[in-house]
Length: 248
Picture 1: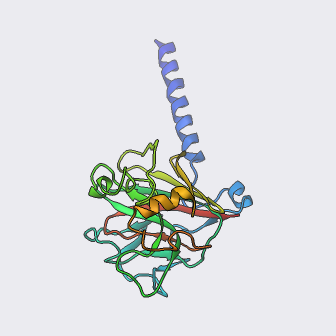
Picture 2 (picture 1 turned 135 degrees about the vertical axis):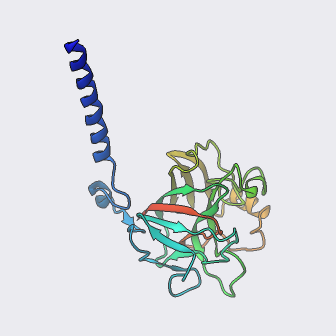
C-alpha cells in the first residue's frame, strides 16, 4: 500500500514539474527573444500602446474602434462595415523586403485582414485603403468565404486574387499564426507553420488573377516598391498580438 502511495506521489510531482517547466518556457507575448533580436526582428506592437501606428489617411490614431487590453490589440465589433467605424490602422513606417509575423484570434463570423504594400492614394476611395491582403476570416460563418473565385476570399488567401490551400486553422477562439514573406517580387503566405500560397508580384499568374478581381481597373495595384502594413477594421472583433517584422 505504501509503495502505491509513493508511486502516485512521484507521478503527481512529475506532472507538476512538467507543467511548471512548460509555463516557464512559454514566451511572454509581445517580446523578442535574444535570438530574434540578433536576427533583426522589431516589434510593431509592444502590448501596451499603439505606438508606431496611425489611422489610414490620418495623422493620428483613430478615436474609436481599437483597444489595447491584456497585451492584445483589438478591433472592436461595430456591425461589420468596412473601415466604417474606427477605420483601418497602418504602420507609420513603410516596408519593402520583409518577413512579417502576426498572431490573430477570430471571433465567430469575424472578418479582418493584414494588408501590405498599402498606399494611401488620393482622392480617398470608400472602404479600406488599397493593398495586398492576407485575409483574416471565419470561413465557416462569414458569407465572404463563398464569394470571389475558387475560394480566393477565404482565410490566409491573397484576398480576391489567389486562394490559400492546405490550411490548418486553429479552432475558434484559439490563436493562429500568420507569416508573410516578401523578397523582391516573391511573396509567400503561411498559416500556423504551413505555406498556403506563393506568387510573384506583377508576374503572369498574379496579373491573370488580378484581371478577374475587383482590382482589375487599378493598373498599379500590388506593385508599389514599398508600403505600409495595415490591420483592417471590418466591424468585427478580432484580436492581434506578437506583431513583429524584420527587413532584408
